[in-house]
Amino acid sequence: MRVLPFFFPPCPFPPRLSAALLRATALEFAILAGHLVLYPSGIAQERRHDVGALPSPAPVEPGATRLPATGPDHPPVVLLHGFADNRSVFVLLRRSLTRHGWHHLEPLNYSLLTCDIRTAAELLGRHVEEICDRTGHPRVDIVGHSLGGLIARYYVQRLGGDARVRTLVTLGTPHAGTGVAPPMSAHPLVRQMRPGSDVIEELREPAPACRTRFVSFWSDLDQVMVPVDAACVSHPDLIARNVRVTGIGHLALPVHPAVAAGIRQALEEQDTGAGASGTASVA
Image: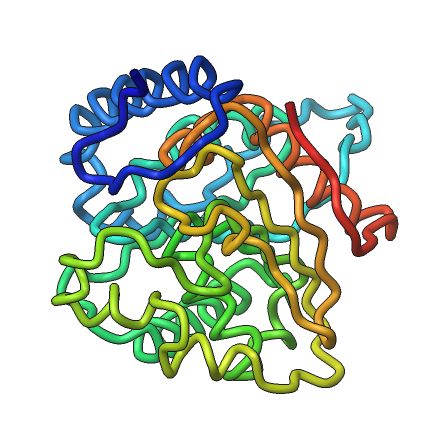
C-alpha cells in the first residue's frame, strides 16, 4: 500500500514507483520536521547589513605583496521562498553557495498577508533595484521555490524585470498551474496558482526579446504539482531549460545536495556564457 501525506490527494502512480514514493514521502516528513524547527528563525527579515556582507580585508603590512583575488565575482543571488514559508528554507542552499564562492546572497521574505502575485512581484522589483544600487551589480540571479518562482517570473516577464534578472532558477514552481488540494483555493494566492487563472494566462502571453534565462527544476515525485510537469517552463519566447529531478518531493528541492549542485552549475553557465535551452535531469 502506498503511503501519501494526508494533505495531498491520492495520485495513481505505477507500481514500480511505489518504493521510490515511499522513500520520498518519508524524506518529505523528515524535512518538514526539521524546517518547523528552523522556521521561527526566518520570520523576521534579515538585517540589511548582514545580507550579502563580505568580511573586511585583512590589513597588508608595508612591503608585502597582496595576492590577487581568486574566483569570479558572481552577481547577487536573490532567494525567494514559497507559499506560507520564509527565508529559513534556504539555509542549506545558502551554505552551499557560500562555500563555492557566492558572497552576495539576498534572502527575501514577502508577507504572509500577501494575497496577490502581481503585488508581490512589484515589491520584488523594488528590492532588486535596491540590491543593484547597494552592490554595484547591474543584474541579479534569482532562485525561487514554488510560489516564489512564480512571483519572480511575473516580475521578469510582465514588469520588465528581465532588464535586471540574468538567470531565474525555479524549484517546483507551478508554471502551468497546479490542481493540488482544491479546498485550499479559498486563499487568493492558491487560486492564482490554479490552471487557467488570470496570472497563469498572463504568463502565456507573448514575451518578445525577454533577456532572462530560465532554469526550472521539477521532480517526478512532487505531489504539490498536479500534474508534475506543470513545473516545467513551456513558452516559445523564453530561453528555458527544464531539469528533471528524480526520487524526491516538493520540500526536498531547496535542500537536496544534487539540486544545489545543479543550481550552482546553472548560475556558473551564465558566467561562462554556456547557458542553453532544452532539458536535463538530476538523479
